[in-house]
Image (cartoon, rainbow, N blue to C red):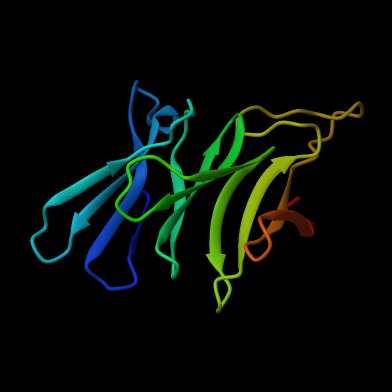
Length: 163
């Protein structure tokens, strides 16, 4: 597991990460385990309906009753939205680069997610692409806002290089 979060009532603890499928555990199946906090029993396993290889890096519980998980892989990032009590997501959002963390604003109307990738299209952290002069460009980080008011919209609000 990579992250944990309680539901609004504190009765269900969600542990998120991935279930390994080979020696490289970061290429596993994104998985959330829901546990009854009082009994300690597993009540549900949640996975995406589409094929995706990579862990859920972070998760938040939305006050409207669903879990949001942020995925990271060499193929890009995904935000999955699971309604309480359901094993498959009800919605997803794709991003060209991997997500690293996310959080909700106070009223739950927007999600801020951090994403990381390089300027040349490389999405994961493998490899070291050099520019024509032999210099390493490094990755760039973004904060992406998703509005949950009038449907979901995606706006990149900040970009910063970590050098």
